[in-house]
Length: 306
Image (cartoon, rainbow, N blue to C red; front, side):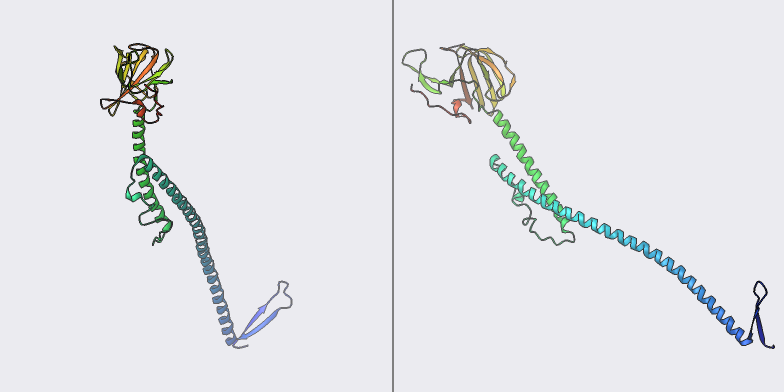
């Protein structure tokens, strides 16, 4: 047939063949359809490639978003912990401030005005910070306060060390245990008669050979025999304070020795101008004899009649 095309389908066994005839115009439609199908297949393949690439990119983006979410959760936990830490620091600063007030009262040191409150301009727990991250600013502020308190506590420490040193060099203990048999001031002459004498110290009764201790830290400036006080020790404690210990039986220190409070320096006795075993203990302040019992921590007993 002219202007027609025959398509023959032959099975493998060559039986029941099928023939189709198409016109020239039908051929064009068939070619166009096949071309359209080819274009659609190519489009679907290209779309599949694009979707695979798109999904891969979006998967990476989603993983990144999940990672960011996890990071945000961690940061929120850290900020919550910082808030708790900040609140604890604020409480600690208040406790430190209370302790500083007590120390300043004891040491008689006036704290600087910048430390009069826990923060400049008010309590940090109620102050409104106009900041994108108030917790960080709060911690920075508290770090500054901690530095101020450390400097103040350093001053208190230095004052306490100085005061401790002053206490160590102040005769606040008696050098020996025993009854005070003669107080400071005028008394009847112990050697008889009705005359009186100015007793420049106190007499403490004790057994012969009892241990004698330094009543404060200082430097031995005399350790030898005296015509009145017998074996005598004199200690310079600084700040114009001097103590002396008389009528000893044996001296354990020599001139120039450094002694601490309560150090053993001698054994009591009856040397010199004495009527019996005892320790004569005297104190001198700025060159003048004073009653040893006027120093802190001493309780002066009622002086007997003379």
